[in-house]
Image (tube, rainbow, N blue to C red; front, side):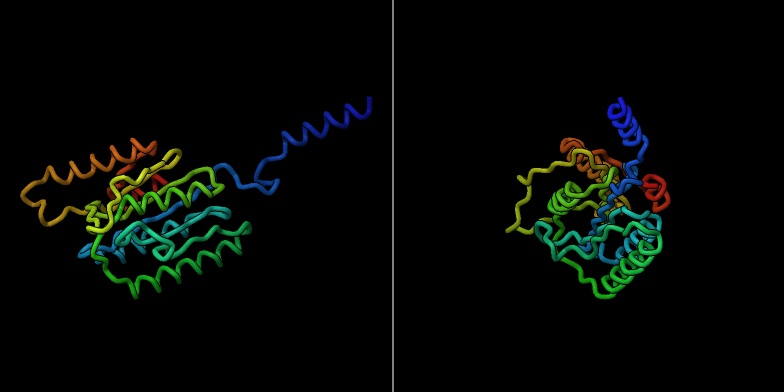
Length: 219
């Protein structure tokens, strides 16, 4: 009868209606959380991290999310979070939001202080829980660090459980430390240890050894 054909028509429409057009977030959308190491001498790499963060932000689309936080002394907290923005739905609003992000990053770069310790695991855990709450289809943590974890005596994160299911962890700008001049294998051992940690937690591991590689991977 008429009712059933009307219902069939509605069902067909529902199938035809693309998710994006119906107001939900498209499945190819991205949530990128960038963690930046500011410990000791590595703080000199911050301008490089900010340049990378700006390029990442500039290439994101409406409905994508970008967050930027520093890997601080102990178990990442909300005050380590410098920026967290989901870009608005219209291109013009998204462009304005990007300008806001750029300004926050620049202000941060002008007043960043080096920390004494580096709690990378705590940073990963914080970023993962933020990404867990995001609606975007592709979830990525970018870690800009030499990956030398140096946790303060009163901050034991070795027991912190990590769940990186559905998340890709991209490490970049992993510099060699001066100590490693005499032991080149130490650098590769460090990468392998972090890769094992990420994969055991269910995450996907990528080492992007240049900014171009990083951008190519994400976009």
